[in-house]
Each structure stands twice: as C-alpha cells, then as structure tokens.
Amino acid sequence: MEPRIVSKEAFTVVGIGTRAHLEKNEIPQLWISLGSRVGEIRHIAKPSAAYGLTTSFGPDTGKFDYVAGFGVERVENLPQGMASWDVPEATYAVFACTLPTMPQAYDYAYGTWLPASGYQRASSYEFEFYDEQFDAQDPGSEFQIFIPIELS
Image (cartoon, rainbow, N blue to C red; front, side, top):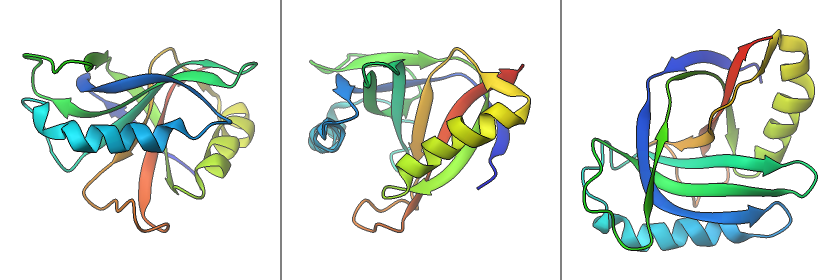
C-alpha cells in the first residue's frame, strides 16, 4: 500500500458541498445529487473524472467540509447551489483503494505511512479522484486518495 508521490498542477472543481460527519452517511447522497445535476456544470475538463475534496477536518469532532465535483477548464455561470474551489499546485502522496477499503487506507496513510515518511501533511485540499475506470457499483473498483504533503 505504498503511495506514489506526485506533483499536481493547480485546478478548479465545480460541484456541491456539505459539512459532513464521519459517523453519518451524507457523502453518497451528495454524489447522487451531483449526478442528477452534472449537466448543469459548464466547461468540464474531463467528464469521466470526478473529485471528492475534503477540507476543515476536525479530528476531535469528526466533522469536515466535503465537495463532490468535476474539474473545469474555467468557471462560468455557476449553477444555483453549486460553488467552485481552486485547488493549488501541490505534492501529494497517492494511495489506491476501493470504497470498502477507504477507512483502512486513511488509517494507514495517517497512522503508519505519514509518521515514518519524512513528510508532513501540507496545508491544502485532500481529495479522492475517481477516473473513467471507477465503477461505483463494483466494490472492487479502485480510485485514488491524494494527501497533500511537504518535507518535514
């Protein structure tokens, strides 16, 4: 489960956001809402690639901000109820996982790999990346978790 270390250029995501809680099941419903409205997003860079951005995670509360969206070439005429998020250029540790193994991937990334890696978490968005290979109906379908890092 060793990650790839990659640099990624800045990009912009347009989608729907919510304040979520680890103990609740809000995220799947957010994706369903986005799926029914994806046609409203203009200038999608790659329709088969989606992002789940996470920010403002409160380790003590289990609450975090989550955005389900698509990368766009430019922002124009945002649909009602949607917003855009600019993700800065950064270096990431990239972990492959499936929906059922996502909790273990995060546990490994933060509990095992990061403390021993010589890196620390950088101040940027963490995100899930779902490409054209991902199939939400297949529990074995892989996607990637991107954790922003910098040298300790």
